[in-house]
Length: 609
Image (cartoon, rainbow, N blue to C red):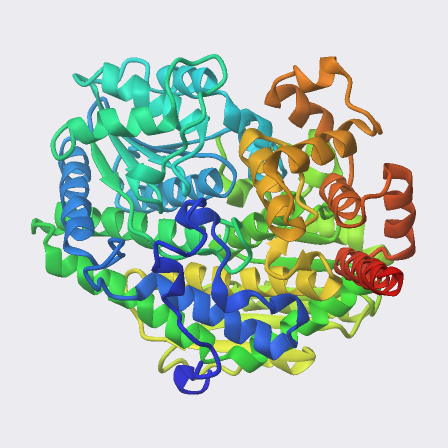
């Protein structure tokens, strides 16, 4: 990316103004940089995503929000890292638990697996475990409903930690909003003799969710307030603001990346201190985070190649084709995570973008083991790709290889030749090390190649993972933008499968239609239940009932939006969406129609007068 020149973009920090969308928390605001991303070219989409990701590393200006490098954030990270170091030095009956929902839970799994592997390499006992709302199925598919159950979160944590004398619990909730995690944090606060809770998120504590949690007497904000009372010794909160997401509310992007940066910095620093008989220092943490900032710069210096991948994937989705990530090692986990997140974010089918990892569940190393009996969606090994996908592969499908110089290049090459028999639409993302003189013969067989070279370091595999995450986030998000799944910078075809997404959908409708929140909720409920009038049993039902019904419906938000824009019935809205299957086109057609009607009415009034 040439000199990171975003001169055409004005006022990067506009979102920090108290007057900018003051009714939304930071994690739900729309990013002023990307308001027209739905009309951008592939190259410009990548530039916009790069500009948004750059907001993660903006320095603290002493204004509204603390940032990634703020003293208060780094000091809290230091205390948490020292707690991890103590556990590593005396691991008996101790546990570090990482927990979250959706993207946060998947990253909890990724980091627990990574650092347990590092301990096994040193012949040390493992001390990390993970929890994801919905269990291991949620690693590969959308199970957001579990996110709304604080008691389930608490019970899951209690069962996992039974018999432990010391537990460091790290709960991840990007928006400080997930009831599942709130229940776990509350449980930790009630048992301070064993549990030390850490909350990681990206909103100020004053913006934590205030809605009462189902079956619970507390709100998330009240739990956070209790943590603040014990902050520093018995509880820790790490919540720098990293700015609104490029696609509003899509915390799989910056929220996920910042989570990885923060927690890997903490855990890697603790490992270094524990096994080299040194100490975690502020300087060590800052150097590690600056290393991740360099990962950002190096990755986006290849923006043209990323745009090529994005455009190719977008063309595949537009013509009904598929995008397949074929990955080796830990990059396979990154690919699986990115693919699984497209389902709830864009209302995608699981076959639209799929991830496959070389050794399947053996490489994945998840708690529940092999899940292939649950259906083809859970078939993730390369051998599954060969049996289920390869026979029908064609040039309308895109295949992307993700591998590094540490992987078995011979194995990669064998797969390349098998894919090439079916399609020439084959691309590669390869991470190598400086000074490596090996010739990458695989690249010669690919339509496009993204080779990224890195200096050798003990944490280079984590840098490869973050770099790959940034690339795949750009490819999957940008390709769905090109498919028309985004209007302005809002995901208008999201699945309304939990309380957070229910309220997000209402606010999206309100912003795009301009009518009241009450009217938006009514329109959403009509679309969910497919009724023209709302009976009392629907209006009196709880959000959990609504989201359960919505999980069995398609395109409820687009339907509600069309109804609101032109004041039509559900049947007419369905007809308009059938004639304009691309959501963005349907919305724009409705807006044009609405403006024409308004103009005609105005002309008629003028004539009458």
